[in-house]
Amino acid sequence: MHKQAYMTDTWLSVNCYTHVLIALELLPLLQATSKLRNAPTHLTFVGSATQTMHTLAKKPVAASETVLGHFDDQNIYSGLTRYSDSKLAVNAYVRRLSALVSPSEVIVNNLCPGLVATGFDKQLPAWLKPLMFVYRKIAARDVHEGSRTLVYASAVADATTHGKFLQSNKIDP
Amino acid sequence: MGQPTIPPTPSATDLSNKTVIVTGGNAGMGYEAARQLLVLHASRVIIAVRSAIKGEEAVASLKLDPEVKKHNPTAIIEAFVLDLDDYNSGLSFAQRVKQEVKELDILLCNGGVNIMKYQKSVAGHERVMQG
Image 1 (cartoon, chains in turn blue, orange):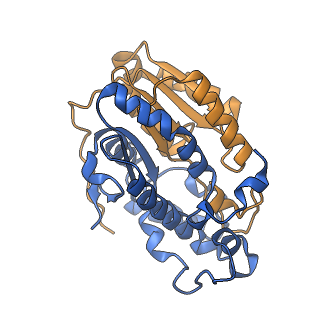
Image 2 (cartoon, chains in turn orange, green; image 1 turned 90 degrees about the horizontal axis):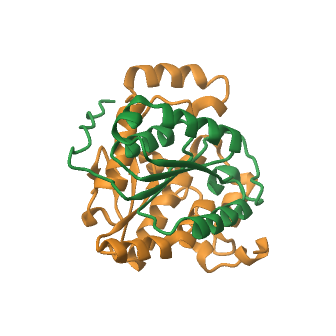
Image 3 (tube, chains in turn orange, blue; image 1 turned 180 degrees about the vertical axis):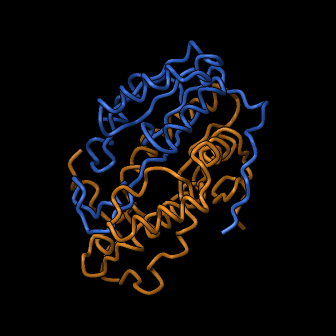
């Protein structure tokens, strides 16, 4: 499909990035499998509790711009908070999609794995790396424990988690 | 910050005859989640990875994992290429899944990046938002 096909405003209004594209493309397969199993399948996104540090309160999307246009704008870009914005978008998408899909077919949820010791900081600037290194050493879950939150949300969690954000395997109220 | 301990996954969790896709499955939490899902007897696990070479390395490593060998020696473990930076890669990936995967029980969207400098994705959007 030509890139221009996505540059319209309809489903951009949440966000239309690559995971969203894949999720929509594969949703029928998840639904068909659910019928086959007579049980719901799972569509799970890794989100983050850092979504609360998003920038939309301080820098709202103006009526004259699109959501993607807003986040592509280099003038309002902040490296420290962009990750939070991306994870807010994930949670927003999970909520929206959950309203369109029955949890008896596909359970759609997202979760925060907490602070986990992985190689995730490799692209951070040099000044931030030692801080994150110490922070993860002191406070982080190891990768085995952290990954159990992914397994929980995608293989254990029931329909009550549909459209929800989980922290430490519990629905964030 | 005190994070509560995550309890072990309930022992009754059994993914026999189930198919799972994990994006960003060659490293970090994605790799470990794929490994744990295999230990829970998932019959087919596909990791979606940017680099075919890293994907094959991760598949080889999952197949050699002692717990996977013990609990799920017959699992099908594969790597499909997916560059989350690029819509076209997303579409090719989805097409390949539709052709080669007849049942899908879990789609775990894990892959991601955190970068501090403004960069554009292949698709022309800011890169952190793209993935």
